[in-house]
Image (cartoon, rainbow, N blue to C red):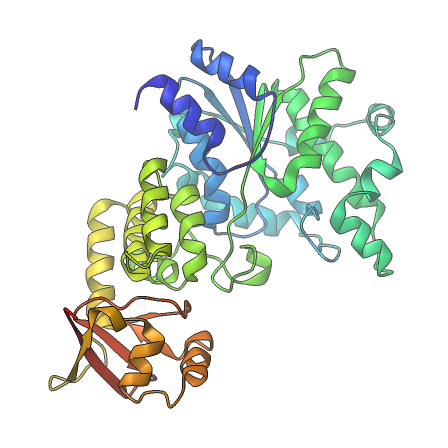
Length: 397
């Protein structure tokens, strides 16, 4: 991939929103060494792959010659950002934050080159922020600016408490941008308001305002936005085997998002693979295994990814499959999963077959199938529950 292609990938792949795209592309194509800020609060000891998404962007930008400016929010972490929360976040003690961030640099260092990055802890300047300076910063924004945000508005409409402390969080994050002279800030799509705050504070102080790039949010293992608070994370500290297995547990409709945001499989190939899967030409299980392998290799290493995949195949795809498994011959024009369940008497009606699939009761080659239009491939193993399984032999009709 040449420089222009890499720049295009940075500004289009998995992007939710971007401010000053033309300016970002111009600077990157001209080889300008941008100071790229990314802030992370130590709200948990583990960094999950939802947070890895913008860190991967940081790695891409580092390859283009930019300087990663990493902010560890040891001060803002005690307050907590509620941008994506339905309720006020419980404050963390300084000791908890200190313990949580103990291994952060080791985890982040698996992705970016820490030696060629700037590392800052925002307690260094936020604990010294004086009241008169804070008064000047808060004057930039109105109460309406804050309460018009979707989650805050919803909470207020439901009569839920919104603390004044929460209104200070975006200002503190924006102040970080001023202090480190950020030229481009990365974040998740839920961070847009906070990142714009940085621009406004820089403008207030006569600085060039930072450009902004936000990545899509990825869903966790339960189909909800990945968050340590909800316990649905795939974490960098998971063993390779557990890490791989968790990726394999995502829903079929999440495969595309994971391939785009958590791997660096060429985007053109991703679109082709997903298109074939949606047409029934590719087994979702195969794409999920490829995705799990690529992400595990990225977070751990290639050897660990190979071993994790082998263990998965041994443990799950061969588990509870008897040696004398029954084989059914199915015409190639009748290989819809619903039709097969009906033909093999696993289900007594199409509606029952659809219900079994939608409730997660059917596995093909060890992976739950949720798509009722799924096309079964030759020699696939179909399971209903733990004790009923058979092989499908697809024959030419």
